Image (cartoon, rainbow, N blue to C red; front, side, top):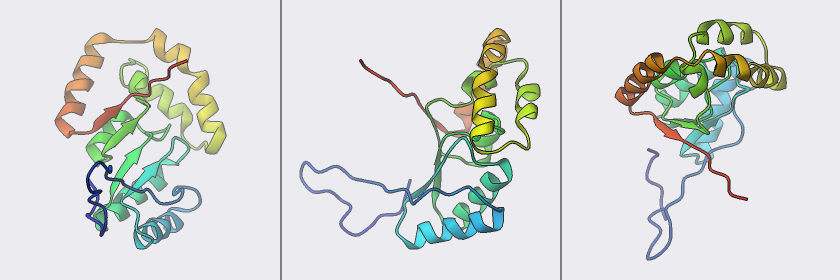
Length: 163
């Protein structure tokens, strides 16, 4: 995953820890590349992505993080398909974002409707599309996508909540 850091070994009974830098993703993709570099300089072990990150910025983050040997983890941006993210090298998918879309026969159409939207607007649209996503579930497509994701090695991280 990340690079070994001095004092990271934990010691007896102590967990290893990894640190993400501050939020990276807003603004122009040129600014985004600079923020990845700043996070690396500050000692970040990986870059965390959020759903609101525009696709162009996400691609810039992946490129810069790759050049700096930093992992990219987190949410799949709301306008990017799960399989695209996995094939591009995003190491994890937190909260199983975009999994339902990846199992929908309408994935391309729904993601296309999100293009050009940013911030809270894109997340609200994604959430509003959920009934359409679930109504167009395709088990064969889901099985095929799951097999393709497994080939990339991307980790799927569910979020479990307890009352």
